[in-house]
Structure formats: structure tokens, C-alpha cells
Length: 298
Figure 1 (tube, one colour):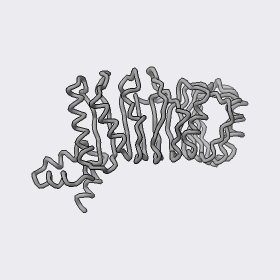
Figure 2: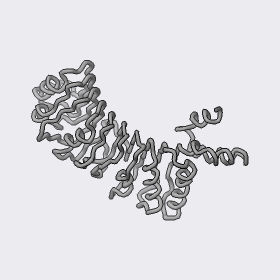
Figure 3: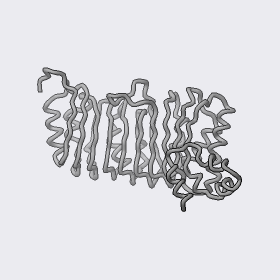
Figure 4: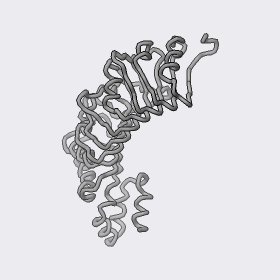
């Protein structure tokens, strides 16, 4: 019991903990090799990935967790810090295998993607997955990234997914896929298409909490009802939506809202008033953040 509590204390803190334990002495090596639970926490910073030999090294390292954890679900954190070299089949295949076995999966990188192969694992079936976090690039103070945004169409197959955190991509949703168990989502929309918001709600029909950064003009051509949403955090440019969006969007169960508007001196007062009256009518706690300059007329 003491040993298992030590494992839980180390989870999320020490990279390579299982290997350190196995290297302590022959007795602890035997214990670690016969304790699959120790190998279910996978934390790895993938650096110096600059050729196929280094990729094979990292693939073998990650494969060890898959083998020694037996069939237990995994908690995975991967920080890909390997520069801009394209990844090859060995490492990509292993990352896909980790994703299929994951209970929680976090993937962070500053890699400048020119294709979607690095995040190709997202198309895999993940029957145990409850939390997914993918972060490409660094978030700026104003909420937006400063480099070219890579567009990605998402089609998840994760029936138990509850928490979805996605940043650094112009994200679009496949119309033939749903994640009905998702309750919390944090994501960034750029290069928007008219179907993005309806597709988001269709993909996550039971969404309770939404943190949304919008770096594009929203366009709603259909009525959108977000039936279960209770908590909303929205960061947007003043020109992101107009009266058409206000009239098409309904949030009947919303309780708390935090709305941040950049370039708000160009935001039409009638649109803001209609947005508050129509979309935020049920809100009990409201926070509005504007970047108004001194002397702005409102």
C-alpha cells in the first residue's frame, strides 16, 4: 500500500519514474516488472528527434510502457520538442498505439506542422479516453497565436471523452462524428466556416462548460440551441459576430459568462445589448472585459 501511494504521489511529477524504480536494485526491478500499474503513467519530453535513429529510440522507450502496463489504460503526457523534422513511421505508430490505450492524453508541441500526420493519432479509436488535450504553440497575452494556423478537421472516436482541450489549430468538425459524453471543451477557432459553430454543438451535444477563443468572423446560417451549457468563457474580436449571430444563438440554461472583447471600440452597441438580452438572459454571474481606450464613446 505504501508503495502504491508513492506511485500516485509521483504521478504527474517525475518523468521516467518507473525506469528509476526498476534501476534501484534487483529486488525493486522485479517488483516493478511485475506491477503493471507503475507503467500506466507515461510522461515524456521528446527532444533531439532529428533523425530516424533517434525516433526509433523514442519509439522503443514508449513501447516499453505499452508492454509493461499490460492492458491497463494509460495516462499519457507527450511534449514534442524535436524541432521541425518530419516524424517517421516508427514513432508515429507508437504514438497512435498510446492514444488507443489512453485514459488521459496530453500532447504539447511548438512544432510548425505542414501536414496533419503528427496528430494523425486523433483518428484512432480510443475507447478508454476521458480527457484529451492538444496544444500547438504558445498562447499569447491577447489569446491569439502569432504564427500561421494549420487547419485540421477533427473526427474523434472516443465514446467516453468528457474533457476536450484543443489549441493552436484552425479546427473544423467532421459532420458524421459525435462525442456525446463531452461536457467541458476549451478550444480555438480560426479561419472559420459557417458550419463550425453548429458542427461544434452537434459534435458535443451535452456540453456544459465552454471556453472558446474566436479569431475569425462567425457566421450562423441556422438556428443554434446549446441546450445544456451552463458556463461560458468567450474571447473574441469585436467584429467576430453581428446581429445575425445574436438572433440565431440560444443558451437557455447558461448560469455564468465571462466575455472578453478585443478591439471593442468598434463593437456596435446595439449588437452588444441584443447579445446580453437575448443570449445571456439567464446568466446569474456576468463578467465583461473590454479593451476600451480613454475617451471611447459608449
